[in-house]
Image 1: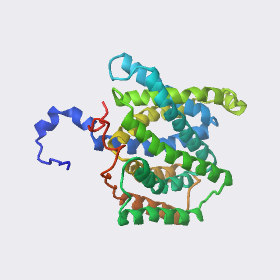
Image 2 (image 1 turned 45 degrees about the horizontal axis):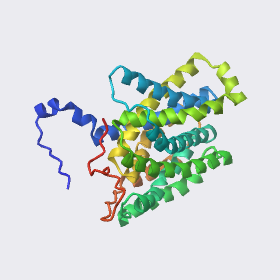
Image 3 (image 1 turned 120 degrees about the vertical axis):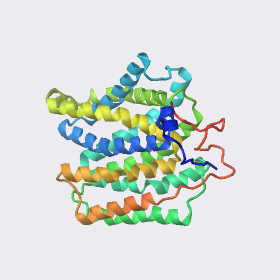
Image 4 (image 1 turned 90 degrees about the vertical axis):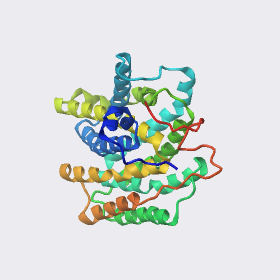
Length: 330
């Protein structure tokens, strides 16, 4: 059992500042903050510049360049490019870019609440995949009740969407399938591919994922036309999106190394409360009060989900690496 010691003196805390920066609260807090704001930032960037592929490319390549620059200055530790690691991270990059691209296409055709309600039901699928592939037990009765409550809230919300678009729902469904694969496979890679630091995961995933996007937006005449007419305010929106993307990528990989796949998914859902309030203050495309209530119900159900323990026969533990030590990032 892990014992949490609450009787720590102030002097001890001050003398060990690095322990906090590799802790679960720091990882989860940073992930929740970036996740809640990045969704709105992406929506605003796409609104200002109708070039989702270029915005996504800017986020990924920009993140890789920032990491490499700080590594060159000796500020952070980052794994150099190695052939074997590139091979192992290539599927990660493909899943990663597919998930984010489907995300941004969903936001282009559907409002934020429509997209989020799909996400609120993903822990059901991820918890089953946790059992099948990552050595977790199935959820307890209380947790099953919470997961099915997510479905109830989702179905209730579906009838109140303030801007129904069949194309938008189609992209959300595509994103749903890719996202569930992303949650399980990326957690598996975190467990099995040894990296020198968390920044190494950020660098590999973003650099490799950005490459195919070059051929996507340069062949899109509509996106090229939109980029030729980009305004100063639109450029700032893209820059902010890139900055948030750096933080989001770092905290996401860090949280994956410290949480189970299902817990990581649930944390991502809980942080959407902030996204809802930000969205209500910025956009005229939002759900009715009853629809918002359904979303809040979904978040409440996700919050009370209890993580299932590991099975005794677990081979691919999502709590430790091959050597049995916690996968804490650097």
